[in-house]
Figure (cartoon, rainbow, N blue to C red):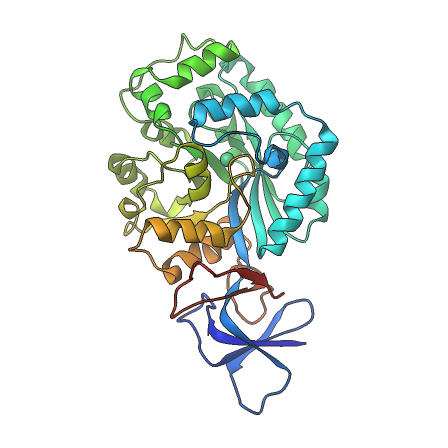
Length: 386
Ligand SMILES: [Zn+2]
């Protein structure tokens, strides 16, 4: 049995607690939360805030080997070209880097991850990990004639993962209408949580609005014929949102160039949408952040992700919170904490065990150090307690 108390305890089940004790069994299951009694023994008295284990809603574990390989600030199209060029590295190196990244996330207090896979490289790591994963088997292909085969291959890949998994589209600029259809048909008959990279670059909107921008150059470089692609006179999200299954929850990742009109459209299905922000990856690739304030107050669900080590310096949600708060002084720690705890747990269907500090759950406990009057400081660190 273990007992912890700290200056603040954010249970995510109500207001932050002060002068309270959390009792867990040795496996981390919450046995009791009660008022601190001065005579109580064996209590670890900690300075800072105790919060539930973090949930990373967007990562690509299999790209961990690209850490510090791609220069910053060159934009998404350049980034994609470099990922493609570097993708055929030694598989053993990929596995080695992914294993280290998995362990680092755990040490950084992350207990669950929504992780994109295009290959089976990480299947074993995720099966053995102390972290709970949802695998997004991601597919792409602009040639509609190949959609059925691409989808069949995805099902074969999905079967290789022991984690919960779903088959998802990569991004509006990389998936044909036929491939969206394949996914939607599949979504009619079973749970298939949808994830899609959304408006990570302004170039994505230019492509959809008037068939201009850097993506044309990417298609040319890759030898992809897009003669049949027509400008839609609207943003990529306005075009693609109706193509996503109405039967499933959807995580929209990045949203850096999402417009107020897009947000108004998404509001009509607000209960299905989980916006996922990856601020450090956005700064790394595009040196731009989403306009967070325009998403707020719309009954939306928000989550946070690290994206991969190809576009981030670390896989740490406290670091993502810090960046978000530094650039959005109107936000508070208490406001953002649910984004990387309970909201992620609900998104992945892990809320029975994770996401909040509640008797019966095994959420993991993190200590945020150097916590001052309800706020993190530049010196704050995350320490995994259990
Ligand atoms: Zn991503």
